[in-house]
Image (tube, rainbow, N blue to C red; front, top):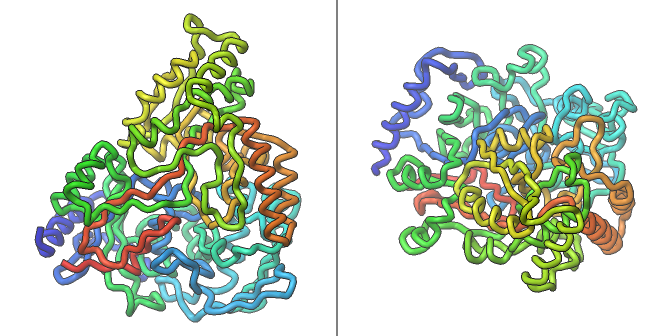
Length: 547
């Protein structure tokens, strides 16, 4: 499909949405003019299939990669990602580090919010205090715990003013850590570490993150959000590197249905798509090999187990569930995406980690595993005539649809009967966070390349906020070992401690770790600058469309 035709189609879609959505001008003010102005003749447009509908674009409430992808086009942390997903200077143009690695002083570059107001160091202080405020109940608040006193602030034990971050002047931010972070520059690229426009939030409240109010310090501005249809971003003319941003308009579409997305992509309505429909993998390899991108990533797919629901607090049942799950069959014969079977949580190739840990049964044949699973279930009081019935919360995308029936059959042999409850990705993760499930589909994509990013997910929660520890797993010895490792400056000793902690956790069987995922995406050959990387990060500022 010719470029001009695509532009015309986008204009029609955006125009249809203008009746129900406000659009944002470049300065953040509201406009009720037709949103067809978001794409005009001669502009370069990118249409991205993005997997799921966001619940929020406020960094405080983001917890899915499909949300972080969009926000990452608009908000810039002290460091950011280059085209390969590696950390580079962002809002900060330089920094100094104390000899002990605990104090980092960042020097902000001259740049503004999209309304022209200068970005100040205090915007970072405000943002980080906001996410740690116990009243906010931010799902990712724990991410900031490496900062001095962050945990105490988040649990209400200290006031926000005690957080180890200060702004001596408008262009200097001083961050004091509780322990040195060998991955600090990558740590800061995360969506929780971006600044917030204090003047907009104090003026607009929760509505600041809607079209017409959203302010960016990054390469794009939020123009329009039509729920369950599309989100449109337009190039930010006030971005400090705007001269090197070539795409004028980027549309994000929630595309959980991979088959429908593939049809749209082949019709020219999408330029990229993630996820891909697994049942179409052979077709894609045969007919669209130049567009198919399958890249190893630091991603773990797993089934979360709700330990607060009886009888799932019985470790015998959790072990049986792990034993009866045929990982090899799932990844090699059913999905066929090049994934690696997972018998632990931390993916192979993770930095600063010796690895070598696994669930104890890894070397058993599957026949032996199934026999042991049946023995454990029998000892717990279950049999073919007395099945354990569990409610399985899962998404409705193509991958999960393809794996549900095999999973039901695997666990049926271990006397477990699954009642499946499918929902949109956003709703499914909400159920997991609220504990409204027995077992549920989950996954973790590395925020930074370090084992702690995976293992911290299963730390004991605080109060009602268990963040991403959906199953409410709690082991004080595990938590203590993670704390000890965090204080260890010798990377080799630290890695050994983390491996010991992971083995301790695996012996409790808090989840069924299924596979270390590849990143299967479809990227049309005319989309240039897309560099596959383990973090699944491809910012639009580095891309262009040539067709």
